[in-house]
Image (cartoon, rainbow, N blue to C red; front, side, top):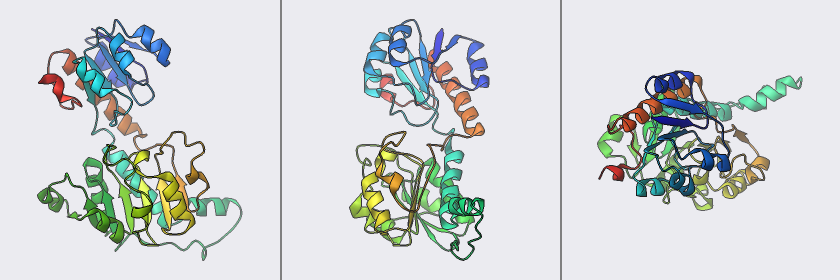
Length: 314
């Protein structure tokens, strides 16, 4: 069968696919994709390509769409389900990478690492001004605690942090087995010294961190978002940082990317990364290999492990 890869894929994954299928790797804009898609049985993308209803309708031969990563915001899953096209992703590929970045951001803010780096490069030696804080003994509040949140909790506990979480979908026994205390949403904001966002983007979570929630936080607390930009209201966070309602923030994801015009860009004591959560060699290799396996199973008539739209099998 014919497979189209539009956002690139690790060489190991492409080799796997070519053992049994005809594979084409092309970087296509939206118009070119519409022209190219009809003969292909599978489409593999990352986050750049938008798999719209129009693309799915033009893909008369499509059986499966694979996202070499976690989020499927760029795929019209409803339209795919209506067409009986399986959508698969690679939800476990970047778990460790995102967790490590979140902890790295916590350390960066607590120890003023980006500012200290700039200071030394400018010929300064500001030890007193750059006095930081330890993670040890602090409370980590998780907003959502799935795979990534659980990995962040493990690393935080190794630093001697207490871990609480607001996650209405996490069973209490599972949380307790991870050493996580489940609390109500307002409690996680009030008690956290570090609030780390790890919720999925849904209609429930979109914009759930706003002025009201930020006002509940300790003035010394920091917020870290390595999940989805739309969960945190950027204007409200910028206001909280300017007013020193909270002491700092680390942001890897934005409401719009790149974040041109975002009020956060002018806010004080905020550290940015350009959506680097899954950007490690190891995570990219895992994502490529995993999505190749999922797509091959779907094309072979098997049910993949990570089906985003299980309704296609009902």
